[in-house]
Amino acid sequence: MKTLVTHINPHLDDIAAIWLFKKFHTDFKDAGLEFISAHEGNLGLTDSDNKVYFGVGRGKFDEHKGDLEDCATSLVWKDIQNQGLAPKDEAELKAYEELVEWSRLIDLGRMPIQEFDEFSVQAFIRPHESTQESSKEAAILGEKILDRILSVLKRKQQAILDWEKAVEFQTEFGKTIAIISETVDREFCRGQTADLFLMYNPKYKSVQFFTPSFEIDLKPIYDKVKLIDPEASWFLHQSHHMVICGSSSAPDSKPTKLTFEQLIELVKSV
Image (cartoon, rainbow, N blue to C red; front, side, top):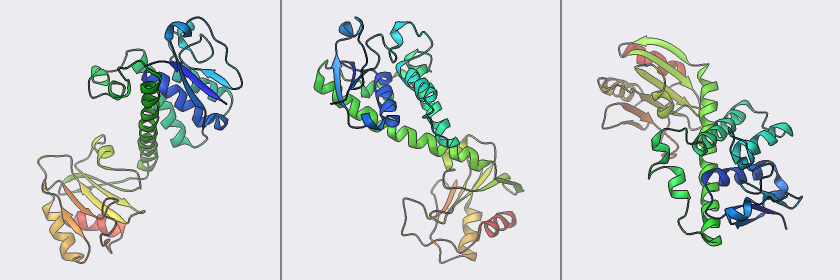
C-alpha cells in the first residue's frame, strides 16, 4: 500500500505538500496517511516507491534539512516542474503558483498578521490533539479547503485573461467597463479602477451592473432596463449598488433579451 507520511498535528504546509503531490502523482491518489513524531522525523528517513515523507525525514520534501527559502509545498512544486508535470494551461499554472507561494510565505512567517489569526486557514485546520485520528481529520479538511482555494485562484487567473478583452467607455456614472466573462465577478472588479462595471456571463446569460462607489445610485439603470425589458428578472439590490438579472444562485430567473452590445448602449443612454 502506498503511504504519505508527515508529522503528528500537521501544519498547513505539510497538508498542502501532500495535497499537491497527490494532484500530480495519480498512483498516490488513494494513498494512506501516516503521522509520526517530529522527533522521529528528524532522525533521517528514506523515501521509497511506496512511501514518501513530507516535512519530516530530511529527504527531498523536508525543508528542515537546510532549504531556508523553501517549505514542503514549494519543494514538491519544484519537483513537479522538474519532471515536466506542471499544467500547460496558463490560468491553471498561475493558480498553482500563487497557492504554492501563499503556503511558502505562511510557513516562513512572512505573511500579514491576519494570515495567522483565529480566522486564518491554518488556525482551524491544525488540531490541538496530537493523535493519528485528529491529524488525519486535519489533513482531510485541509485538502478540501485547498481544493476550494485552487478553484477560486483558477477563476481569478482566468478573469485576468478575460479582462484583456474588456470594453472601456464613459457614462453619466463615470468610467465604465463592460466585460463578457464566466469568471469576472464583483470581488475581481473591486480590484480594478472604474466607477461602474457591466458584467455579462454567457454561461448563465446573466447580467450585473455594479458600482464599488458609495456615492453612486444605480436605480436609474434599473428603471431603464425594466422599461425596455420588463419580462426579465431584473433585481435592484437594496444598496442600489447592484442591478442583477440572473445568476448561478438563481438559475430559474428569466434572462434578459438584450445583447451585450445593447446593454452597453443602454447604460450610455441613462
